[in-house]
Length: 142
Picture 1: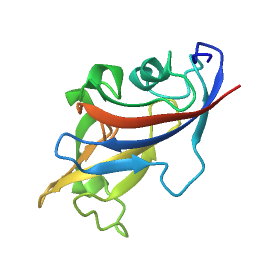
Picture 2: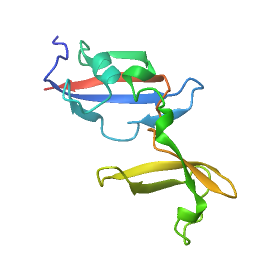
Picture 3: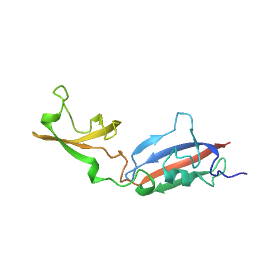
Picture 4: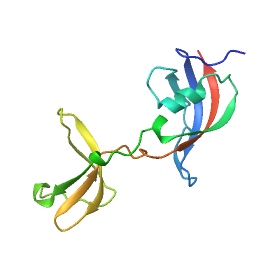
């Protein structure tokens, strides 16, 4: 039976959980995830975990944050004076907003705090700084 290797197109069912057991994503009830190994379409640790699996293989792996979404970067947490927030916007904690990035791109940020004077926004990926556990099942290689 062949094993998945770099350049192969693979289909995999997965369930991703955090350290406390909270499920953050799953292919359950959906089509399996379809991607090319080594193609940069998934996080590095996920790519590495699938490499070497054969069709029908199942395993559970924990991917450290540095091979997932990276460590949380403090420079991506910013304070914005309320005077600079559009008047029709009423920011609330955990709300997702879009703002212009340094190169004109749209960046998704999360409101982490609101005071009388400032809104604190976090532009880190939501899973940054977290180790992720995945239950994997390889269903196809092509």
